[in-house]
Image (cartoon, rainbow, N blue to C red; front, top):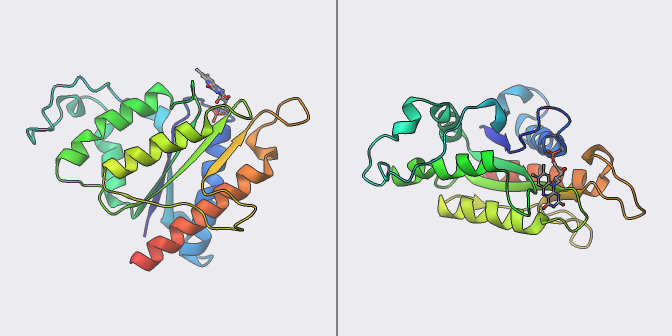
Length: 209
Ligand SMILES: Cc1cc2nc3c(=O)[nH]c(=O)nc-3n(C[C@H](O)[C@H](O)[C@H](O)COP(=O)(O)O)c2cc1C
C-alpha cells in the first residue's frame, strides 16, 4: 500500500504546507505500517523538484496520443508514482486564493492520465492548504483540489475527528489571532487536522484493499 503526497509549494526551504503534508503522511504511515515498515508506505514529492512544462492545449491526450511535452520533462516520473499509489494527498499554499502556478501546471498536464481512461480512478484523495492570512483563501484552494480529484474519478476523503473540534481537511494560517505571524509548526489546529486527514485516508486505503 502506498500513499503519495505532493507538496505544491514552490518554496525550497521551511514550507509550512510541506510540514503539514509530512504530518499527514506520518499519521497515515502509522496506520498502514503498524510501526514497522514506515518508509515503504508513504512518499513525499516536492513539485518544485520536477521540471514540468505547461500544457499547450494541443489535445494529443484527447486523441490518446502521448503528450509531446512528456518526452522532454519530468511529468512521466510523477505519473509513474501516482499510478502506483493507493491514495494521493496534495498540499498547496494559497496563492491569490488559488494554487501556485507550478502545481496548476502539473494539474493541467495530468489530463493525459484522465484521457488514457482515468488512470487515477478510485484512488483515495485528500487536500491540505496553508495561507498567510487567517481568511486567506484556504477554502477555495481545498475546493479547487477536491474538484481536480473528482474530475479524475478519485474518491475524495476528509478527516473524521471530533465532530465539534476538527475540520475535514488540513488548513491553517500564518496570521495569529492575537497579532503577529507563525509557521505551521506552531499551528496546533492545522497539525491535528492534517494528521486526522492522513489517518482517515490510510484507514480508507486499508478498507478498500
Ligand atoms: C505569490 C503569492 C501569493 C499569495 N497569496 C496569498 C493569498 O491570496 N492569501 C493568503 O492568505 N496568503 C497568500 N500568500 C501567502 C502564502 O499563502 C503563505 O506564505 C503560505 O504559508 C506559504 O506556504 P509555504 O510556506 O508552504 O510555501 C501568497 C504568497 C505568495 C508568494
